[in-house]
Image (cartoon, rainbow, N blue to C red):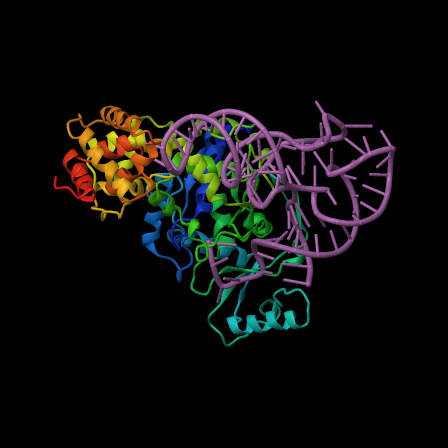
Length: 466
RNA sequence: GGCCCCGUCGUCUAGUGGACUAGGACGCAGCCCUCUCAAGGCUGAGAUCGCGGGUUCGAAUCCCGCCGGGGCUACCA
């Protein structure tokens, strides 16, 4: 994956603050960071905020927070500055205006006075006549004299546009099929197709690594770069899209799993999510499934990236996340569990960790297992035989030290004397103490609760006063 | 509609003309372990490689056609 002139590698991601941070942004950021780190390059964060309608400044902070949570930090950005500041497109308007003016004066672009309604009509007509739509160039040929509102349109020169994609190889597009498109909107803001290549060029981005939805945008952008006389990026890489379970592109509206923050809330470890994302669309060609970040930097290469979109799968993510959780040492797991168990003190969490470790697909699941520690579950209705066993348990637990091994020993003695299986004794206790059929091993289940509370819950169902 | 990308078990994938009776992982089933649930161990089911034609002694791998999915085709990004 090393490139010849490594010192000049500059990559970027350019999210738009139009909603919560998207899973695809994390994925794209990961590949950019991996490439940058492997080549000693620079990773730039640029905010593409040219959509005045949908833009919300507060989402910018969400993007920062999500990316930082994942450990994907950038070298240059709006909040950090850098040699190419500003890094927010809304603050670079002069640059686009200057370039648009140049294109205009060189006859490579022209003013278009058509209204959205007129354009819509053109488009509908083409559709009705089943012919591919291209802007009619009405305003190039015969511009109206009585209008003031205009957009700036690029005069598509025609011919072939070729470029190198690190994943798919040499790409060729026929620009004759592309209609003159808009560079500057009538509100004075640039379109994405214009701002993006101008920024990439002026920020000296060497490799453009982004989602596959931009593959067919590339010729548009390259034509602009050429028309402006800028240097083209060395290469592009269009990553396969992350698809939802239903096979369609992950959308913010339809698919909640596209929300990056959801993973933090549910207790997915950032390093596990990264690992999963790396495996969605890429594999090292070996059977290795878990990778440290440094391993990914070393192993990742674009020539092993999948060409087809990959479906997001909770099951595999859960497994990987579980693997990472199990690999954590007790103190670390306890530390990460803290925000998910606000009802418990640190010492209790730490005591619970050994019992939780193999039982968590995510950190939030710990609350389901330990809920009985801060709630008072209603006493279950038990068979007389079960009640009898609880009475017996009360007797053996009464004077026992309150720790898992002692409890275990006492209870096993009782089980042996009962002549029945352990479950006959343990399940009634579990039900009485937690109100649930599922809980950590019975010795832990009991020991995590203060002894007086545990005993009172047993007494309660045994029908004898404490 | 036009252009572009893509198509191997349910899912993520290995595979670049013979070692493929198509491998691994997740999930699933069974067994073992076991106080429940997990974790762990073992075993297993699961893909006529989208379909149809070629080329070849031989194709998942090369060629053509078709079908299917996705992306772009916006004064969204």
